[in-house]
Image (cartoon, rainbow, N blue to C red; front, side, top):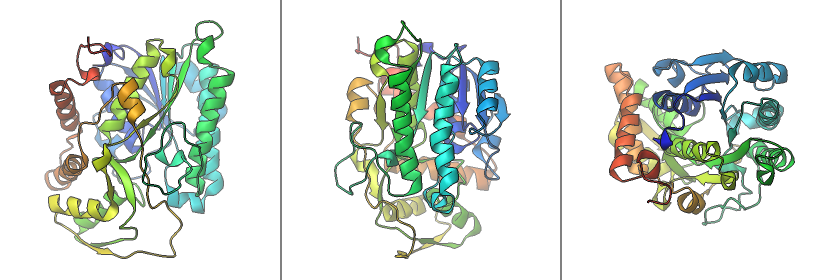
Length: 369
């Protein structure tokens, strides 16, 4: 997979104890990479990081600690960096706006500066969010060249993080100077609402449904009409890894921003997600109760991923229905059978990619030759 480029590579993942970061580490480990993680302790118990069969180098530290971060880079000497460490919650950003800004903006700058000062780094993929765009609540998907923005502190911090990435790339990692004044290619990735087994985060829809199902309680749904681009966690991860492959190959034309989201049918309402999840795990009741006094969150958000499809030849594999089915099954296996099926999900995803002839899972080139 991915041209075997990760086999034997030293890969540093910030935010490795988080939901998406731990899934990425699991895949990188499966690809034969030597994985180094830098993050805070897992926020929840249980957590996917603690449940997944990971054998990686883990350092528990704060992304805002510049010296500690640089020391970690110097010790790990990574070939490629995947930056996922962040304050990831919209509602928490209202309570802790300065912490959110400090972590998501300055934390990103710290990672980029550590890349600049570590001569082993050849590539960096900086993960931000689909919420980085100036949301105009329109029906069209946002494209990579649309303006950055953000109503709430979280969304604004992600828009600013993208500006930081662009600044460091233009100032220190310009693609035109690759191989002349520097040897590092930097790209950013923006994904939609990610779901999958092992997420117990606060104020997230699927974890709220899981907690209600496990306790056989009723969950209140505060924004049933909000529409989001829902996708299984493995979908954007395949995009991150494919993008990282291109950067490691020295393809400077890929040192840009990319969206990774579901097909059009993946953008569905919160209410529809709840109904579909309940059809797979009927252990809870729900009440649709819009709250007019809750902090502002975007009502409609879509991504245009045509650039990733045409330039990277990246394609989503599991639609929203399959993503919800796999997610519900993961939690049911965990709570009812005391088993963790992350590796099984990964293998199923890879086999489907091979069956469909997806570029990263086959031996064919990016030009399908």
